[in-house]
Image 1 (tube, rainbow, N blue to C red):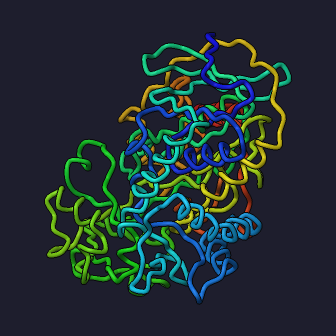
Image 2 (cartoon, rainbow, N blue to C red):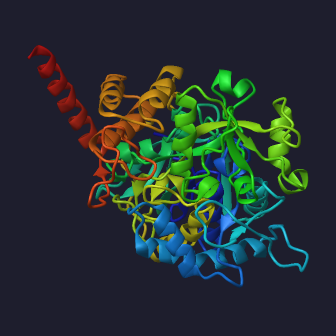
Length: 515
């Protein structure tokens, strides 16, 4: 193990280059710490934040209050959102916007100069702060990147892939093993390690996520023994754009933002039926409801389009228009073909109100974390604000803590391989929008036998959680258990427990075959 001198011994180490990683690094630096920021690729489009079209939810309107935002969050979360997490994040949201404004983020304004506020599904008020129409993620990310590059307390290591968490003699996380841009092994010691590595959408054949979203941070934490929560809850965005080479080549699908439906776009099948019309909320029903409705239409052999021929669509939604035209469509003149695609992981590494995981010395922020905010179904535009809020709380907690001892010497594993097309197809087929016991058992068996591979292990935790949850709730829908259980419960697992359960399930299956 090679010890580098690039990470101050009493500094903090953040892994990830999206809004969670960048804002945490800036907050830690603001708290007086030296920070090392590890990013697997160059800063920019490789982060899921870059592609976020909708915006950031915050109660800024005259008719709005944080408690109303919290209520909407709890309603969308289908019984699993934690009231305290919803209250705290909703309460912190307006200040998070102020912090971004202080970094000179150019949010859109109305004719009076106030922040322009959009409406999205399951929100009771207009509270979506956005930039360049549907370019919010890109604009915010560019603002944060500029601030990070200008901050002398932040050392940026691009092209560095963390491959293991390292602990001291007392078991406290005290650094990471990594492979640098040239594939060489190294180790960094740190007072605190913060995972901000994003989600796992790229484990699915159809996803809106960048292909680097393979659950790498989940694998790091799980292999170190961290408790994972609600891993089975994956949100499928209803309106990924179903056209162009991405469909055939397994590339990320471009997204038709939910804000289009907030401004009047309608879903129609190829018979001309507006099939959402009689469902409560119609096109602005919670995402899981809309995704299943579209899935049912597609399963019945019908094509689904989003009719977004709205007034001023080119001015209000330039990114969507550009994406469509790049794929041979003109949304000004024709409807957009759409389908559900893996978009956001509500589960993750379990953290407390300070962002602490079950492993001392390890914090998690953003999509990799399970904070209790999203429950079984994330409310639109709550992801970016969650990352901003927890970045501040994590920084305060880390600054108050004490440094661990030296990390014990350990071998540095190779960087994980990307998920295979076969694994992605398996997850799409059996652990997707609609699930059942037979398909989930097939998935668990195949993934358990796939070897000690990061992608397969993370996928196994998702599939095993889905198999164990014999109900339908939010983003998790079982045709053999189509109703929610009487009591909403979180699932908590470890990788070791998941592997034991998968082995027991395989033995039980073999015994049934013999009998």
